[in-house]
Image (cartoon, rainbow, N blue to C red; front, side, top):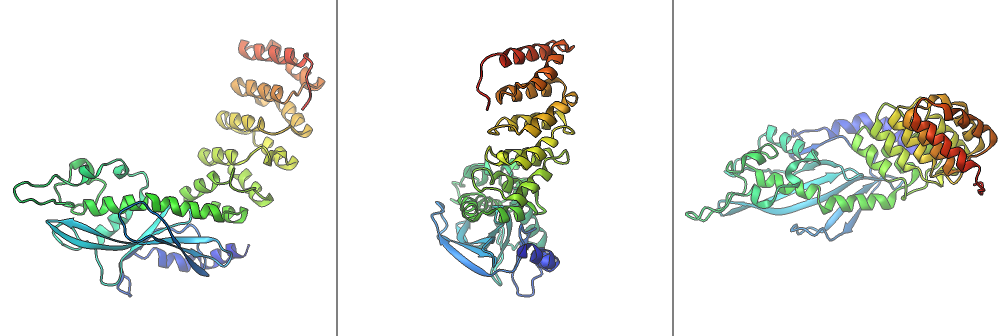
Length: 371
């Protein structure tokens, strides 16, 4: 894959740039995290969008690779932060990865952020702000404006929007002395701008792009990619094989999402269904159950799959065994070999399993249409 090779060759160079923190020879203050995709920018597109916020700029910029894959999204933010009856313009550009994950921010040359007393941020405070913006699960999303900004002082008629008077339960999630600036930037980062970024990437999704997203070093990117397969694209053979590798005990969350990413159409593939079934036997109880339940979505079970399940019947215990019986009953697997195997379960020491086996055998004697 051309882009993948470029990623591998240029990763070290680009990471050196993207991890840059503050001492930029150009005079810009900028902080970046780990990018989802690293490749040369071939073109830049812009989109005029309704962000439904109080920022005047309505343009979102999209940088793309030669293959047309979105690499980064950018939105210039020009607004005001007011305190002590004075307002100072906030001029900052926010960047997102193609999955909507916050990538970083930068300021124009000679521009800087300041606190309530007009004192410029220190390098440590820029780093703190960058770290706070990286946290998509920050409680800042649940705070109301009035919890960030103290009430006006009726004596002096002033509102200190970013001062140390901010309530103690908020201080942990903001740069001290710049509470409103932190709050505003976090809510811009995770508001409608992020939604537009994700929607634009959804329109560009292909099996090859999802494959690249799954190779990101960031867990959020992997989860986003897995959540945007079923209902968005039809996996090709390469992507299907990758999804199978994610179904393991190494990371249950990724395994669960990989299973959900497959649909009934994918499970019609004989090879995929067989390889998918092989994942069941060494799996833990929870994962085994998810795999068996997913096979119920298949239009039909391949004969080789039925044979494999029957051959490994002894690897099923407890609820996973009853889930297997439910799977066979769902697909009307009532052939003589399967019935013989289930017949032995009627004497199982677990009364519940014995009862399920009895119910299965009763169903198998009724007239039915084989799937």
